[in-house]
Length: 80
Image (cartoon, rainbow, N blue to C red; front, side):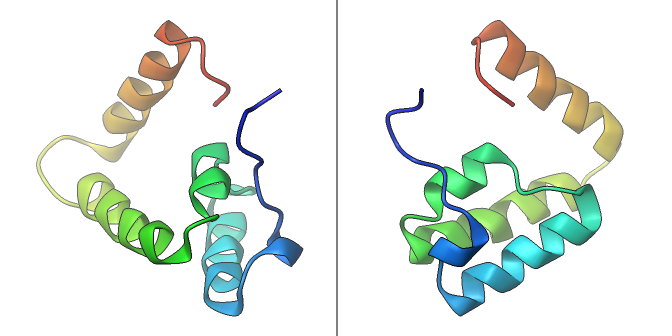
């Protein structure tokens, strides 16, 4: 069981719900890391902006970046 709860859509403010909707449309779910950070909406919104900048820019393909994220989570025994 996680030490910090993962917030559901009905537990967050309207701007955060809109971000949840975007992730649900794009990925089918909101990643657990984001649901945890949503306890602090101001940090959550800047994290999303940073994540999008990392994933959507640069020369490394997004699929390879995603593989690195998944593998790092596995090595650290994290729930992805």
